[in-house]
Length: 134
Image: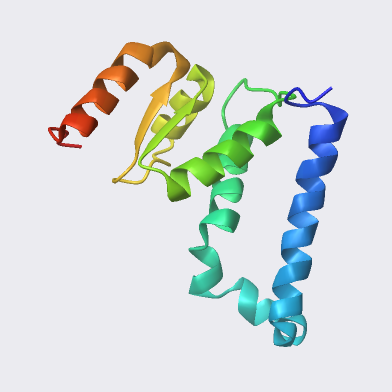
């Protein structure tokens, strides 16, 4: 089944992360011998595809009373892509609250939860009309 948290999606997520690491080393073979320098670099620390998963994972892990959920890997992947590449991002209410509480939303991104459908529609309509101040 291709539902969030399914065995296939978990495998796919891990596989994609491993492919990313392998491609990075293939494109920059000198990294293999300078791992500690690379890990401490500002370029790596600001790379959204690495930064957001770490921030979101840390936010989840340090939220009092919150236990890991089957869809967390999917949510983390979705938010990593959305927060680093999009002007408008949607997610479930719990993840929206987590991102707001931990201030993970870039200044130029507007995040809507699934319960904020009317706000999302209004924002899109204002944007299309060229009247959005956000």
